[in-house]
Length: 201
Image 1: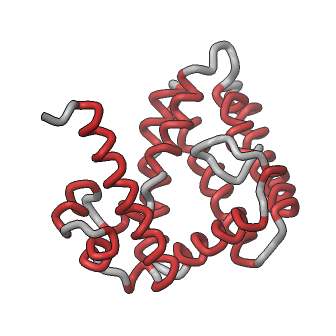
Image 2: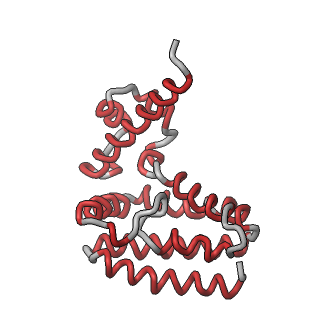
């Protein structure tokens, strides 16, 4: 009999294997050109197994977004006396990744290249561009609940949309990380300053 812990570990490994193979296929062939059958074959599983873990092909690409939302809402809920805006500021500005701490100073050429390939894949797909907009919009209610203000959350989604646009634009243009960091701190930093002033939240 397989223990619950072992079963959960095997499920997590299978999910990760599917995600990893899908990522390589998307980067190589473009999102629109990859089928779920190809992902299943590459991961050595059935199509049904893929759809058991991922409801749609877009979910394979946006696999990390639930972690990003979780990082944002957890930070808000654990902020103590800090304002919601100031609590999120380091997460939003101090590194290119939202899902986990990764300071700008630790971004090496290999990581930046991988991020550029991913940005190119998203930018080249109308489906993914629409999906990105839908994901950002879907964060409105969870952020509002965690912060206690729907108007604040709506404007924070706008700041996060700007953040994504500046990061993606820099990646696609081949801009160096330090310059993208500065643009983000200037542009998104101003948006966060305005939120702090306007809401004190």
